[in-house]
Length: 396
Figure 1 (tube, rainbow, N blue to C red):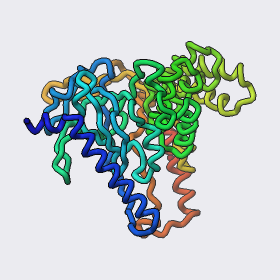
Figure 2: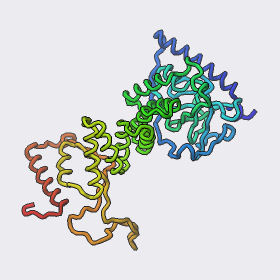
Figure 3: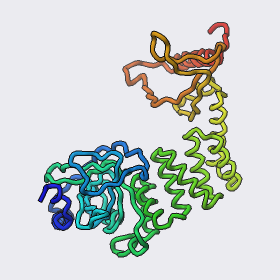
Figure 4: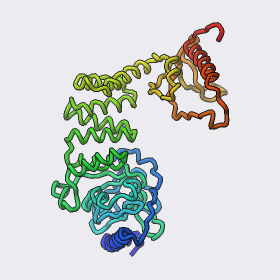
């Protein structure tokens, strides 16, 4: 029997997994009795997830997996066929979707904290859960030398719809109800565990795909994860079901603003303000969207923007490109040139910074006189504003 085939034999893997479960439970009992101390281990780094949509990935079965290889452009899917256990990673067995005599070990990092209760692990991944893994990395595990799939970014784990309602919740001891999963997702969201919240809300959506509140929650999670397109998609689906759902309107507008779609954002916020005229959050967001739309057309107030940075509060700005283009310059390589004659003071471009670092002069050992500092800063403000506005004033 080949090594690969041995690693995919479901019965052998189940026997090994049951031994691990028994050992883990014994260790937990010993720890609870104060006999053993277990140190919490930090999960591995959370790298970028697969960027390809699920539908564009080619399905492969377990026999096609190659050791020490990340299967780019592919996906593997199957069913959880054991009770999951948790150490640094969540460990489970995934039964092949085609051949139920084969399974593969899977370790998922960063999905839950390493000190998460086992009840939470079992609730998230009960036996019978159908999963897909995007671009699986099949490798030899350090330590025991066995092989399996390693998932570092939990966004690469896709929860699939059960084949029937009977399969979805077959054993109440193993699976939570819709309300319980939703409550767990809300708790994860409140504690800023957005990855877990996303996974739980996705399970809610599988049970009730037309539930607008779940779609709104998914949009909110993706906004926190800065996944603007995903947030916009879920909010828009929610609005197709309930066009007057205030939170979906707000989340749709928030995502649209981050994508530079200011007209869409203003449209949704205007409707949301009509439905909730007393909401200061919606009114503030609407004013922001209107200002960003003006900025996207090159209508900035540079002096005001500069002066507002005294309190280190970074305002949201719209990117703007004026009469500029990048082109090849003979003998010089690529460069940026204007596309027409411009006057002094013409705004050419505005681009949000990738990062801003503030340094306290005292950190560098300088003694800073506040009164002198204010005078110098005021003069620099005036000079900078004048340069940006294209004016020339005497004495500066």
